[in-house]
Length: 284
Image 1: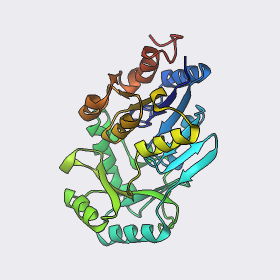
Image 2: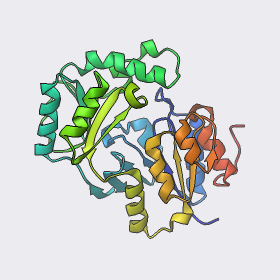
Image 3: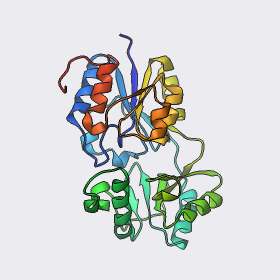
Image 4: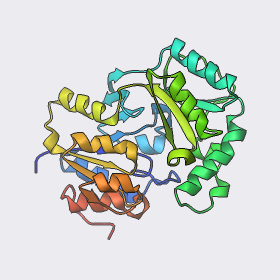
């Protein structure tokens, strides 16, 4: 079988929404690699959120910040991030509006002064939105276990800035204030969104995969993409086969070539087996 390039979203795809990594997913990745395939993560997470449990799997490469960073076998292909001046401008705007936020960089996650307290309610709503039990037990510490506080917020290595929406108007105002940037929402649909975020424009998971394939001289027909959310759909535009997780939203399921089981129900393993990427069965 021709070697395939397999691109995996992380949250809701590789790991469950409670950050649980199924052993079946690890087995699927290792078996696929043993069969000559290459496996990459393509995630909104910055390198600081790629915790040891995930990195120890041993991927062939990593795309982070929803496409602003590419690393292959410990070689950095590129890193496109906000400048110190851009970060200061966004941080000052958020502080002026009394909005709590956190900075996402490869060196760490940096929370604003009151993000730990104000963010608790929002992360609980996020877990509940994903349809999971015990949402009331979620906290900023459980969702972002290595977030740093009381740090300098004027940094020059920031990939993206996420902020708590006190109202949908905060997102609309941010979009108007930062017209030259990519301003979005996450953690809910439309006016029910929980977070806003600001990042560099014209960077997506699709553009990153396209650059990675060009660097490796790989034909897109030899690729698979796995995801669970709307932001993963651009991967399907460049990859030959798009796979939506069973726990994914309606939009990505409609865009997918195949729908597998939920992440926590051996979704990756079952899809790898379905497409013949692996064949040794352990998790039936």
